[in-house]
Picture 1 (tube, rainbow, N blue to C red):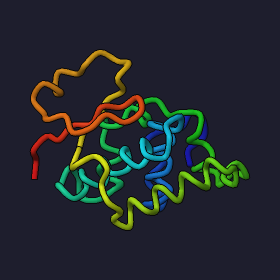
Picture 2 (cartoon, rainbow, N blue to C red):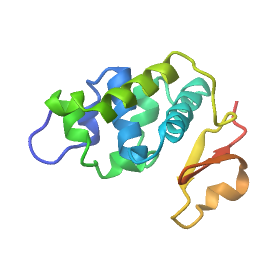
Picture 3 (tube, rainbow, N blue to C red):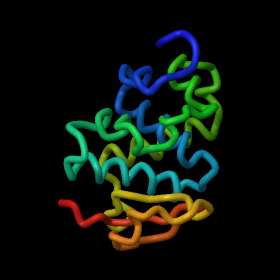
Length: 145
């Protein structure tokens, strides 16, 4: 890991599970389990549809997941294997992400995009089909296969 502020490149050495956990923690830590599972499935749907060559490529692509554009407070624990990893919410998050990686049913109905309902609607949303709303996120399918 680099010294100083956390950078996107710092996450490249993480396992798929730890990277997905860091992403879901950064994007949906305050969401219920279903909302966290939805965010995890968006990542998995992007991997399946070739948005990148693998999970790391998809998750760490610039300007795709805002949590890596400006790393969040939770990220340091994933990079440093901190004792905070034993907190009950982290243990539960790891279970959620492990199930998504193992191919659990997709609660997003195939979504490969989402945004938080409290931000202005992104321009890309008009070109996609809304699939579901869960917690503070709205999920969309781009139709890319």
